[in-house]
Amino acid sequence: MNLEKLKSDKRMPKHIAFIIDGNGRWAKRRGLSRSFGHKIGFNTLKKQIDFVHELGIKNCSIFCFSKENWNRPVSEVNYLMELFDNMLDEYFEKYMDKDVRIIISGDMDDARLPETVRVKAKKIMEETKNKTGFILNPCINYGGRQEILNAVNQIIKSGISQVDEKTFNSYLYTAELLPVDFIIRTSGEIRTSNFFPWQSVYSEWYFPKTPWPAFSKKDLVKALKIYMSRNRRFGEIKE
Ligand code: IPE
Ligand code: MG
Image (cartoon, rainbow, N blue to C red; front, top):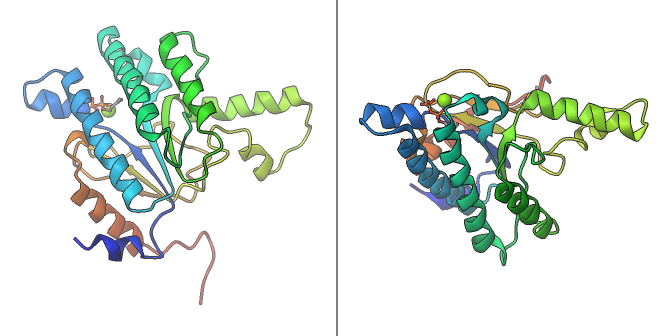
């Protein structure tokens, strides 16, 4: 695979997002626990983030945990929280002296989140906020409708009586990110599940059948080629 050619292609997305789906089914099919599926899924995530970074893509969002995921068994939720806690420690160490900004999109004030996760998430956002390079945006305890309502309520509180798209956007968790060009949801589920309802109106979507733990660099290259072959018109007609 010729990565240099891919990297220098002007059609490459600037912001890519992943809905990481299929961890549980991947594990169950192998007679393993769902939690084990998440563990392997998080290894896949690390590799994919490094690859996205290496490819020069400026922003990467990942839907890690939705507001609706609290309805899963407590043991699974607790395991996921442990993974996020470890992930925050790892990113902190890995990226502190690099030009990487970390934004965690989601409700970080929710008391259901372990305090360590809330504190670490806020710290990492604060300490990387002046970096201008790659932006990594794990979405944890995220729901698109809740994000919109949160923005509306903040706007009401601030006393503004009318907003335009630009102002509204500035109240979202993703305010500082580039427009989302490309969203990949693995595992063959074809729905958007409350992810980026505002941000994704002109995104290209791709739904590979591969479950997330098995999603490889080769799969990402294939996805990028599909993305680049699409004609994004944004409602215009170009002669
Ligand atoms: C997605 O995999 C991972 C997270 C929610 C963190 P799932 O857990 O949704 O896996 P399936 O869909 O049950 O296979
Ligand atoms: Mg799922």
